[in-house]
Amino acid sequence: MKLARRPLLNMLAGLPFVDPVLAMAAATEHGGVTPRWLGCRTEPVGGDGAAGLAPDGNSPFGIHLPARGHSFAVHPSEDLAVVFARRPGVFAVAFATATGERMAVFETEQGRHFAGHGTFTPDGRLLLAVENRFDGKDGALGVYDVLDGFRKLAELPAYGIGPHDVTVMPDNKTLAVAVGGILSHPQSKRLKLNLDTMRPSLALMEMESGRLIEQFPLEGDLHQLSLRHLSVNAQGRIACACQFQGDPLAEVPLVAIMDGSGFRLADELRPRAAELRQYTGSIAFDTSGQWLAVSCPRADRILILDGEGAIRHEVPLPDGCGIAAEGSAGRFIASSGTGRLIEIDAPSGRTNDLAQARVAWDNHLVPMHARG
Image (cartoon, rainbow, N blue to C red; front, top):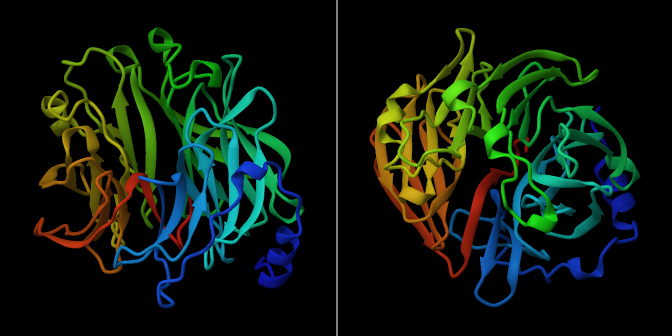
């Protein structure tokens, strides 16, 4: 059910704030430019934050964060989004996507930390936030009430240690969860505590009940291939970006795809794994669902894959990690830690420079009107 915008935003605006350190930086207008994407960033002066991003590289608003953010959940019908702390942080900030006005700040309960990702339910009433536990047990999806100041109502199982990303499938009933398999703890910062016993997987579950529908584990010599980020196209094909935590010279696939033919690995990437530093960042289908872009920030490039996971082009981009579908079919936008913003034409591999900002863009670019 579509929520009435003004009552919702008024209700959130009247909430008490959890932490005054999270005070929002004043919104900066750029001639009425409407932001098209959301991204986290680090500024030379000003520290960590999140921002709206326009095609000309301007940021119509900025939000101060106490530490690095990671990614966003974007409300399906309202001018509302939530930015999550980077693993293993505990804060999240809800804000108006038109102005950057902060609406609410909330934290995980004791013994939990956010994993940087979440999504709204299709009706927009609930936020599902990926959470990991300090005690080494399976992580969960925290269920938060949007209309009650993001009060936590319950948890859904996530079917493994270290869930990292979640997305709603096109049927609006099923959730896909990237279970990364990595245990971490805020006191240990980002140290990975269980590399020998990792059990990554892709899990499909019923959104309403939390019942597991199917799970695709990575086992044997791939048990350290952590599934990190997800993209799903309109036909229900899921693409997973992976990061290997084992032998740095091992030949491992770095992308997995699940569709009607089952769960398979992009074996073409195996011989390239060491060159790519065994690490992929963001992943995104284009608007047609036929092209796939995968960032490899440690190898300073963006890979353009076809729908089967075969490499078609390699686009140089130093420290390039953020990827999002752009407008027409076959087009992507990518951001980098050097502040560069480029457009990529997937069929040809050609690029167009859009902007050079004086900020370091972080891991993800999220379209304003897409699920987190």
